[in-house]
Length: 307
Ligand code: NDP
Image 1 (cartoon, rainbow, N blue to C red):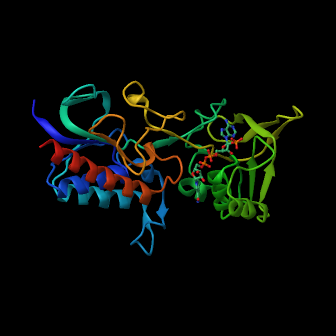
Image 2 (cartoon, rainbow, N blue to C red):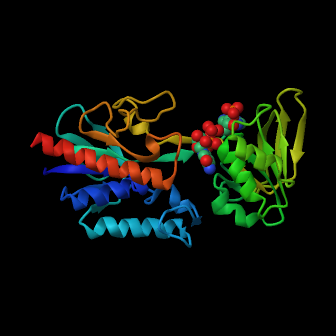
């Protein structure tokens, strides 16, 4: 079995940027793109904050461009799912559903996924009024009423965005204050279409084939009510996709891969991690891409030092 220089796991902005840099450094990278190639931006419509795209770019189009750029310099693309890794000794081993590979370095760019409450109806009504992305799905709720769950910047941003379409947005906050930044809080408070329901939790979604309402409960008084909404947006944060590495690498309390300060180096030499899988703070495509670039430069330096 031939040993590779670098295997990149994941195909969001971090993974593709790492691939572009590795390929241009003649490292002949292999990228294993996972089940949903392209990552979270595949679920987004217009991306307006990607530098160099003054008119905005559709998420899937941006990912296609990044893919083409990575392929142009010779990245080997494998559409497969990694099922197991062994970083205990060199060469590292990366197993997928179909193959086993050996490699000198690994760049982990597996990203993050939206968290869900896990209440009845949330699974059943996915894509039928249940969403974790207002930018992707807000358009479908013109003149309708919706709920947003959460009290952070995501929830504030999503509720504000949804008022472009929806006639009313209920923001369900489980405490009596928002965690969101001051500016986002002000935007929420000043928006007449948003009604904040404090100390309130969603307990069940109603409807068989589409969302027809959400049962809510005040966690102080125990009082229950039904909101007659047609849309349900969870904005309670994201979970890094690190299950595969739980017993292999050091993770922080929230499951993000621990890395050296100002670096993408993990606790195992030769293993690097980039993008949302190490970043609970910024979570932007452009910051993920920057981290992807750093990981490629660090992998290249590591390989040079080994030689
Ligand atoms: P956060 O972790 O910041 O906030 C999650 C929110 O969801 C909190 O208010 C939390 O409540 C609530 N929550 C969590 N679990 C539950 C639950 N089971 N039931 C009800 N509510 C729940 O996540 P975000 O995605 O909002 O933000 C993540 C990071 O990304 C932050 O650093 C944020 O600043 C940043 N970000 C920045 C943006 C921007 O600058 N434009 C936009 C979006 C995100 P509680 O407060 O009680 O814990």
